[in-house]
Image 1 (spheres, rainbow, N blue to C red):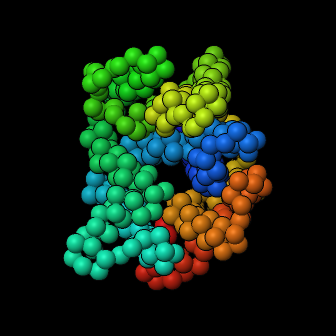
Image 2: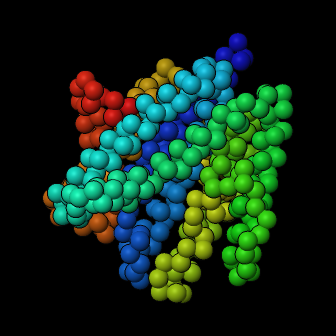
Length: 351
């Protein structure tokens, strides 16, 4: 009975994290004004929103680690890749093609209908240069390829192996580069840890958090470090940028120390709070329904956001735009996804 309760709790916090990270992604893209530095007051709020919602991408990667590492308990590796192709690769290709034609008709993309021109177009779509918000997919596909050998590690030793990988990855890929960056020390081509490069740290961290039962002291330390990470990101970016007169990214980056500390704290906090959620409550049922549309929202939201902004000539620098657009764009995405899922064949591109 205790094991069943624990599994339900895991499902609950994953649904909540999915919904929360999805909302944060749309908020980040609605807050594009951040990337236009200014001494005007709007940029302070833009910096705060950017820093506060920055957990979105790391949390998505940690969710992947939480849900996919144990895939062998449910299906074969062949089935694993079949699901990844159907749920992510096919939608990515389809919406990249749609995006190319959208950009073409919007006058932002020139298509040369020659062999070389088509090759350049395909390369642009595959490298996410056409729809830049799809950059996430390339790293996600890379991680998908890494999951099977990690899943093959026997459960009897998996936790110890993952602890080692997470610890070394954190040290060499996150902590040391951060310290060297802020101290202006040229680390150069120092020792690296190939298994834990890029976003792989979040895969290990997500699975380990799922398996770990936190003590009160561990919760407290995690949240204090999370607050420090957020403040480093928000205040560090603000102060350094104000000094330089342009955006300084010393404290930015999804694999940078501030984002790592903050994102882990958000993940752990949601996991802790989700244990108290009433499964039969309306709020949780609404979250679950929303979580079922998160990937579709990620695929579609940029189009609706861009189209509304252009057609209605909206001011992207206004606070009401940057805070309010997600509450308009997300429902429109859900409605569109709901309708597209009713259409044969087309439903395959809105998982």
